[in-house]
Length: 124
Image (tube, rainbow, N blue to C red; front, side, top):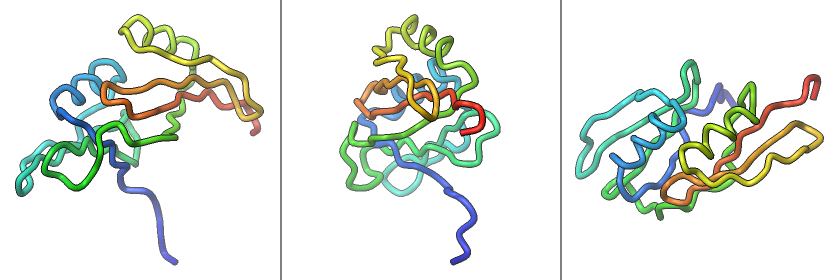
């Protein structure tokens, strides 16, 4: 096997413009691609400097159900500060909770895709 990295993770969304506003405005992601492709739109976002991007897959871009993504872990330097920012933006968060590997919170995007924020414990 010669796999070197993950290129993208698909996040199924109902409205790409609404999802784009959430991922850029609330989470602070950057747009990596935004162009028409066939009957749909190829829209990708990512945190600054990230190698893996998120494809916001809307209508016409595959047989995906909006809100069906689960278990996506995003690493942050300060989960408590980011938790407060999410709450201030009206995002419902679960946690923070302590785990052997770090401190984390869960939340959903506007379509119900489940994501988590984690501040990793040093040395784990």
